[in-house]
Amino acid sequence: MTRRLAAALLIGLAFGVPGAARAQSYPDRLIKLVVGYPPGGPIDVTARILVQRLSAIIGRTIIVENRAGATGAVAAKAVAGADPDGYTLMLGNASSLAVMPAISRYRDYDALKSFAPVAKITEGYEVLVVDPAGPAKTVEGLVAYARANPGKLNFGSAGFGNLTHLSGELLKLKTGIDIVHVPYKGAPEAVAGLLAGQVHMIFGEVAGLLPLVRDGKVRALGVASETRNALAPELPTLIEGGLPDFVALTFTGIMAPAGTPPAIVGRLNAAINEALAAPEVRTALERIGAEIRTGSPADFAAFLSKEQRKWDEVVRLAGVKME
Image 1 (spheres, helix red, strand yellow):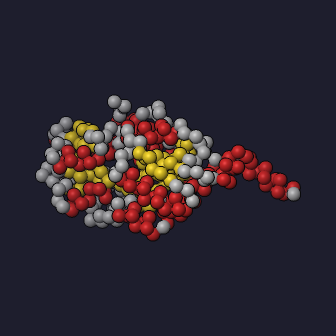
Image 2 (spheres, rainbow, N blue to C red):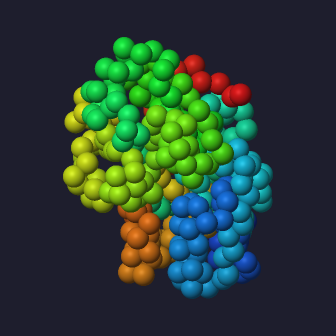
Image 3 (cartoon, rainbow, N blue to C red):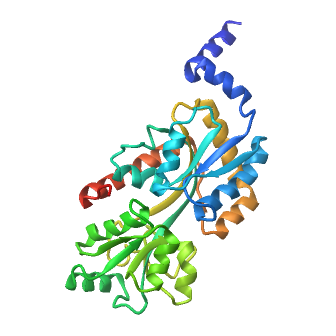
């Protein structure tokens, strides 16, 4: 009896008695997964692939709610202010969890203070593509031309505060070139701008741009990864192109409001990792170019901290500020 009482006290100290009690019955109603981007986009598709299997594993319906706006910040602020009971979650990405908070100086939310990281879902990388009719055929050629023609070239992005924006700022910092940022309302608009000749280059996700590369509609200069991408092993990395340590990592992950009981976070993490191991989920995510990355909540928190430090430094050095 003494040992049982001691164990109960330890559990209460670790999780809090109310939190432990809630975790025992969790989940007992519908769960909402908030996505900060419009329906049909890669983040939304990732969410819908995941919840189909996750709902079956966890035994409750999970609905996807789209709350687009401000590069995911609208959804992030809403979820950060929700009850920390595990019934309101968010699928965030690099832009909403690392880039936009850095640009806004953590005015609205901080991914590590406003949320409890639950599980990392996928990873990917940005690729730099240019107009095939333009002067640049290599990274070296692009940098040389830009240096000889300061302010003449521009780069499009999926929006101010997006990872595609800061990838361009990182290019400027790494090379010292003067290129002009042209923000669009989203990734499709930025791609259309490049195809129409409105901008000279863009950064975008490998999977989304690869068909255009292979059709010859855009030219890929390099992938912003440490090693060559499995989807396109023929493409060099930007590091190979002469840009040391140039890595722009895309990712998605599930977040809960700060204060969510650790037992509930752990229950969700285990269920999400189980869902990601399902062959049909893996196949569906691979089809859209996503590489699955699983781990513990602590793993995801450490990863987010590293990404925050990186983009904080880029924002500081580039002098990027909220418009």
